[in-house]
Structures are given as structure tokens and as C-alpha cells.
Image (cartoon, one colour):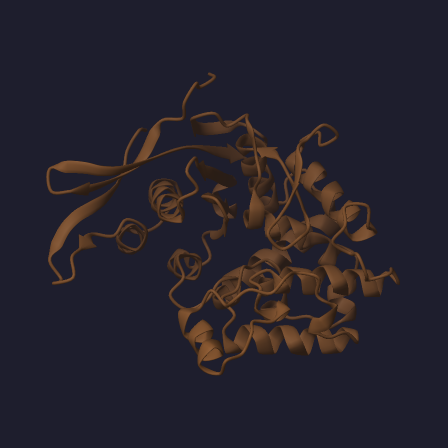
Length: 335
């Protein structure tokens, strides 16, 4: 079914009135490629943004670079993550780059203030400018650089589409998703690397296959399992203090991992069910993406009742005014 407009999936109410609405689309796909449930236009290409980082990290493990540089769960999780720029994030990445014989000056992601309000406030109090390592994607970039050094490739320009690093990433995304990328739209992500347009259906399929290894060669299967377990064991490194992503992974207790991307994108990997989930909120609202993914996981991830309650409270919070009075709700609808 083709949609002229994606349906309303998330609403915010205040009293008796629906105050805000968010349209979007999502797909639940199993590791054989069968779509279990979809709403909205899941065949229109979208940019996955940071939600695709687990796929972008696969060459780091597959090439042998992760073993060569003796990387552990913390490094692998932050390679898949969008970190908050907190102290442990920066320490892990700096020490990792030092192992490789590089420094944060080799990172080609631009600087921005940390996502963590506390970390950003400390920089401002010290009248310090943000550095490249504060970029939430600096862990991913450390992974790309580590692979390039291990393969004896020139590191300068590693974020360019024609660089071997990016060609490997594009090949992995095509193979795992099953999508033909020759005519796929290509943009530039916020951190400067190419971002490839994928339909939500293909993106969800890639997450399902990442989770179970179905249809993947043995080396790639081992790599997906290693990255998945790193995210489960180190959820803080995937995001940070108070972040929905970190809290959701913790609530999942190993049943799933989630990864958000800019502009209302979110993916989930649920290996025990053989499912991948991908969604996109049309107006780019993170609050709506988190609410919708919380609903989908509460229904389909096999959580116990307590886990369901925690996940829904996390992603669909009651709205309060400044006096602490409950005045509204976050609601998921449309399916």
C-alpha cells in the first residue's frame, strides 16, 4: 500500500485536547525478510543517520582491526553509539586512539558541545571550546580510523565517499540490508561521512539479520554477535546518563538493543525473536520516535510485565506543569 501521507502515530494531549501530533512510518521485519507489521510508507528511502552505526562498525571487527588493537566492549559500544561527551566517553576514545598511534586531531568529525548538559556546562564555565572528540560520533570515527590504520590505508580524507573505509561500509550496508544501492540517494551526515538512503523495510531487515546472523557468512555473524553483546554490556557507552537509548537497553536486559538517529529515526534489534524494527517520524521529533519505539518493543519484544511498564513510562511520559501537576499524556495511536 502506498501512502499519500503517513498516518498520525504519536499524539500529545493536554486536558481534553490533542495539542500536538506526529506522523510517521515503521516496519517490523524478520530475518528472512518477511514484513510482520508495517504502517506508513516503508518503501520510500530515508536517511538512517546514526541509527545505522552498528552496521558501520562491522568492518572494524570483520577486518581483524578490533582484535589487533585489543578493543573491548566499551570501545565497540561507543563505535556503535552516539555518546553524550561525558568523562568516561572521552577517556575511552582518547586511550583507544592512542593505541592506534593517533589522537583526537585525526578525527574528521566537526566539534560540537557535548549532548550532556552537565559536560557542556563545564566547558562553558571553563570558557573552553568544544573539540572534535566531543562530537557524539567520535567513537564511530575512531572505529573508521582504526580500520584504516590496520589496513595501512591513508587516514586523511577517510570520511570521503571514495575512501576504502567508506566503500567497505557501503558494501556492508548493501549486503546486510539486501538493498541495491547503485541508485540510492546519498547525502552527508552531520559528522561528515556519507549517509545512504534506505527504505525502512530494508533497514529493519538489516537489523533482524544483524541480530540473528541469518544469511550472513560466519565471520560476519561473529562480528554482529560481538557488537550486539558490547552494546548490551555497555549501554552507557551507546549514549549516556539520562538518555532514552541507554535506559531502554538496560530495561531490555539483553532482549534487544536500540539505536536512535537524527531527524526522528530509530532502530531496534531483537535477536531472540528474529526481528528488526525501523521507524521514522516525519517531522524529525525524537520524543515521538522514542514513544513509538517504546510502544513497539513493549508489544513485540517479549518483555515481562515489569519491563513493559518501565519501558512505557520511559518513552511515553505523563506531562507535568511547573507545579508538578499531571496535565497531559504522550499517546501512541494509528495501529
